[in-house]
Image (cartoon, rainbow, N blue to C red; front, side, top):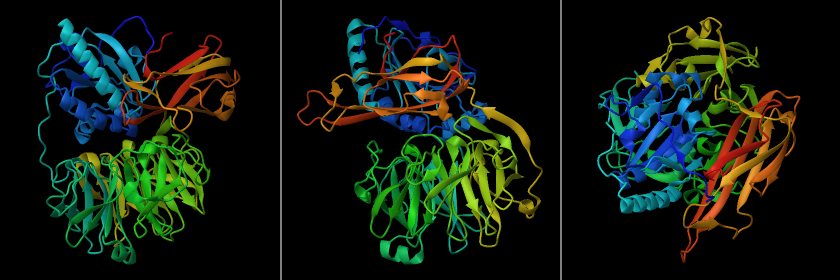
Length: 612
């Protein structure tokens, strides 16, 4: 790592603190501890991955390490303090969280991507910055070094941390994610925060049974011993497929990065796809043995075109899974997080989170949450009907090419060909009419609706995740479709980076973790992919190279846009006889404003400290 002047950590300032029992923390309160400051936003799947990477570190170093979450929102809804408090509970965040709605602390620490980690030593100096996920191994080595150094200097202070857990809740469901109707007419719900499945009677309220112990885990077995980790999507298999595969229902076990099969008659749970490791590899078009394949936060499931399609939210793709052949592979997407249509698989997606098959089986509808988009696959081509990009969102009805959603998580196909959307962060159900090409609002004032079920009697049930319940749309709501909403159009308020028109040097800063080296065993160790929205923002410099720096030519005639940058670096343990391999990867969507006084150097930190 380059030698740089020591930088004093800026103070942690925001609107309020959570998980501290009402106490406002300062850096002085935390002096003597190793701090990992996690800049996150609760819509971001990569941020959720980092929460899980930090859990074992918090357990291992609990008396010397304090993790501080700084919540720096992207979407308007994420600025709501009640929504943040719900998210902290939903995702089991067991450390203090600073609410930073105006991105003040984010800017003080020069964060440019969600997630970003800053490490502060016990004397209050920033010693490392890391963007993206996959840093657990490097963090472990760094924390070990800091503890050893500061224990020897006498500047380490061990003891209990400032975390104060919230009060326990007592609702029957806790942050339910998805639901399906069973052949019996009963409903099966993924009770995500309680790590289990719940079968409800047709009334949507009466609890009949629970599948899963309720403890976070990945054990197979009967309904009382099996365990999940924040399960989401559910898919009832066709009867002939269930008979051959040996299970009736498939579960997207999201945080375990697994697919689980469930025999509904007995409640027996079996792992059918995934290793439990998060996918960190390269994209190919091959079929792979399902149990030998790494997955990444599968979020929803749908039976389409003779197979199960998996919304692989963690890597911005769709995958397919064959329960009979027990194989899996990529269906759509390149792992670039953006919005681009066209023939499969070379399209761009952004955290697909909801799937539904049309009544005639020809279309697969997709809620692409981070682009706030409604999209569909038909005849091997991906098409967007609502949605304009990663940073455009709102609540606007009317012609589909002008309508806006805000982070939708669920979608349901109606028998008449129209589509309902669980417009999660707007707290609404919206309806897209393909015949007229229009969007209308059906229902509002819902608590983070995350899924929709069209029942056998033609009714519609809404999974109101933040209200911990299923609710039924009023009869006639679909026909009435509500008043047309012409709400506020939002763009993400993350401050743009000022860049000059003309030549700009893009530099991705990367230093291997202590004890690691770049791994060129299978080719170049690094890779950099650059694109732009709009495309003519870049006159030169788009494409893929193996160097982590590049000269870009910015079009001075385009006033603003977004640079999409994907960087990865492969490393391995330097001295070990059987060296472990590691892949560090990050996607940046960097909003830029072009002007004569803008910067001619654009640094992005993958891991390390920028020396300039």
